[in-house]
Length: 171
Image (cartoon, rainbow, N blue to C red; front, side, top):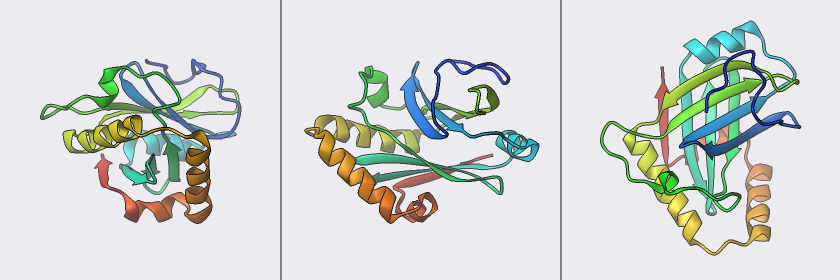
């Protein structure tokens, strides 16, 4: 999937905030806000980006921080929300990893900023193993929602960074 800057995003996102999915064999992270400053858009392209992966109560949470530009944002993933092909749970060869795209959308769902990265083999393997565990556990939506609310009511995204199973910076 490839949406360019100043193009309408392919899915209509109703509310401001964060959303993610796994689509076309890559993770898609979207942050929607009213507007983005030139500083934030330039930082997305040029500043170090950190991804932390937290696994708490059988819930995978991705934390994305853009140094000195965008505060830590949390993205919750649930393998039970959609049908995913086996590439989500694959084994990674040395030098490979999940591809990811980060999109910044404005209030009109227009892409204002975009960055593509490739996670390392180590981070991708850690994530894939946790997603397999989530897939294989019996799913109870009420329990998932209750656990997620507990996490989000207890910790701000930046407070969860020390809980990460694995963290990586991308320059």
